[in-house]
Length: 336
Figure 1 (cartoon, rainbow, N blue to C red):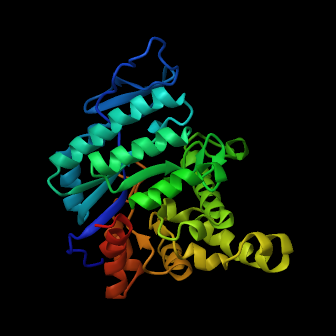
Figure 2 (figure 1 turned 60 degrees about the vertical axis):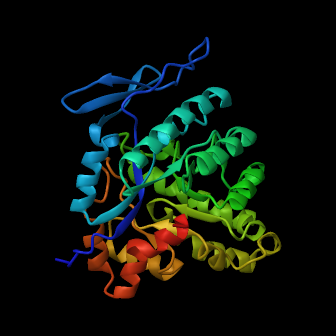
């Protein structure tokens, strides 16, 4: 059993669902506008398109209970962001902005109530780049957020697509941190089994391709000050990277289009440590660098790491490396 008495960790991957959702202010309610319905005990049903999307507990919005759980897992700060299904890229942009503004204000209230124990990454309607930049400015300048959570794809377009370049330029200029989470992943038709395989198998695949799109698009060459992180350990990127390196060497078209060694680009991005496996965590440190990995738990959902610090201490023996992964890397990513 590892000695995990530090109580200094920063969890960069923790989600929020508000206790309730507002009524739509327009005349025709979008079909996928979310609502809440009562469930058992301290739980509520998140309703989307008239169906139960997920049943969630009050830990999704109850700050006191979240802080009590943080104390049990040696987390000093929890970085909250919306449940990815609430990112709402599939809505028209104006209704999505209305919903996301409400969610962002709810995040701000939680941060204020937490007394320094929480920071926030908000959401923007990236299906409309201009509106997304406007909301990002609100997040940074009015709400004081560290940055924004983005989906791995926006209605099928990877985040490395050139259409999003103005947004990333604005994010870089504002000093906004960007945390990329899987949403509506591709390849679902290839899975055999229950719906939960989306989280287990499809999420890491989509995150890996999103991270690869940042590398192959040259995004960080254009905006070297951009701070961008990927959930679930970067998904499949650690396995894709050696193949991409080899391809860069043998395919002239790739050598011409990717101007920088791909591993050096990957080592400029950040990744959470949510991989549930000590050898895999050590591999991430080896591939990306011990200054690029951060604690992430996926709190408060069932499919989360309930002992992140213990897992880290069992995997990594070096004290200085532990300190970087526990909190120093997150402070650099969040600019706090």
